[in-house]
Image (cartoon, helix red, strand yellow):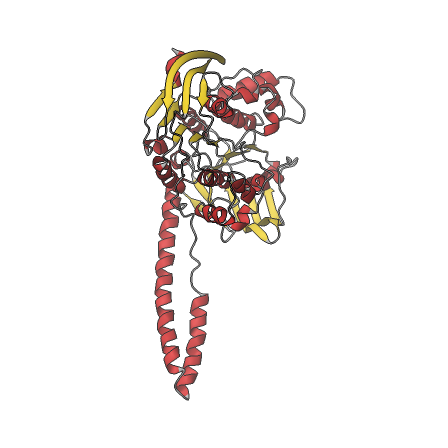
Length: 493
């Protein structure tokens, strides 16, 4: 196919999980071959749903593929599609790396091991294929999710939050790969710098109108264009409202007069109604979540004590003695490259099953897991919040949830059906209601809209309990008042 050929087209596609709640309404757009397109939109706007609709249009749609309620998704010349998911499927955790790649094929090729090696080399990565998925870090799993899609050699590559859990080196390698990649890519991400490095167009999904708009340019260009458009629409509406009010005042005056004046008032009412109908519907952008405070349980003694840690060197653990005691109000960041054992340390610490780490038995612990595996996906959002409260109070639950844009309809939704961004905000709402003495946060910016991050950083700085943090989001970390740093890489020397 030539450079200018259309490879993907949506023709008046409407979709909703029920016909009463549409996520897309008559969406029409096209994507040309070799384009690098960003999907933008508020949390819950349907970005991941749009990916599933594309997958549903393939010759052999996967289980997660969806079909439109109306309209048609066209793939040119039977183009193939593969997706790099946000998180590793739970059923793969007990499988080996080789088993994971084998799942990409209907019939496992005889030269699978070579294909795996070639694919990992293409993203400048190496991994023993006999390793269990559950033993890998979030960053290592993120690289495998990308490689799993690439080994299928798709014409269209779908990337859903591909920078989550990646360290700076991993993000740099991914950017280089995408800049050199000669096929079509559609990306969902909240990382503006990452998106600006390679994207040349944007599809904007509006949660309020359920429409899709198409723009040319990189992420920042489109954000500024949308911002300018909103300002123009607001100015136009402000002038229209002024004109409408002037006419209403005259209508009220003339309607109390007789004869011709009353007829004039009737005519002006019609003009007012027409002008109100012609007002521009101003786009409702994602607003930052409201300021919030995470109350801290009072624990006067040491909250966390660490005397021994392990780091992974060449996929084998190396142990080291340390002397770390964290009391109320202390904030510590744990640093190191992907695969060194940061998430493993947090996970074992939270479980209380790690020799050399002790948590005060009186301390309540809040744990933000990078894959949200601590949430019960079968419960509704309301039940998830209710479960962390000592004495559940309905008013407190709804009041707290509203601060995180979690409406009544979202709280009535099973956690498993929420968007990843909504799951992240649900975790923060849990912390507010739980009042933990210790917060363990593993990549707490994952899946969170960038507009919310300054508010979250402010809340974590004000948190008076003990904070243990792992994060590769340098800008976010720089906003935090960190007291101590544990760099695991120094124990590998």
